[in-house]
Image (tube, rainbow, N blue to C red):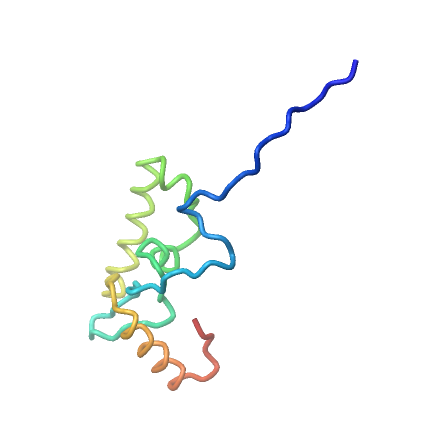
Length: 116
């Protein structure tokens, strides 16, 4: 007995997913750390507030567990809060223009620093 598999229609990319060659809109805002003197720390620039938190929080936290477990999320928020309080930092949103200025100021101050 020979089994035949029916032909499946081609899979189309949903409109919300962009292919590798599509043009994506540039980000208009970034997130970073601001210290107690108001200085922005370029090494913590990221596209989302959560990405900045991952860079700051000690240890490794599983992104999926943060989404599904409120107790795990509380542990993460507590660890993050301790680090932010210890250094008198806060996570702030900055415009893309200000983020670019922050990166160029860091590059001028420390040419060996990694470029973000």
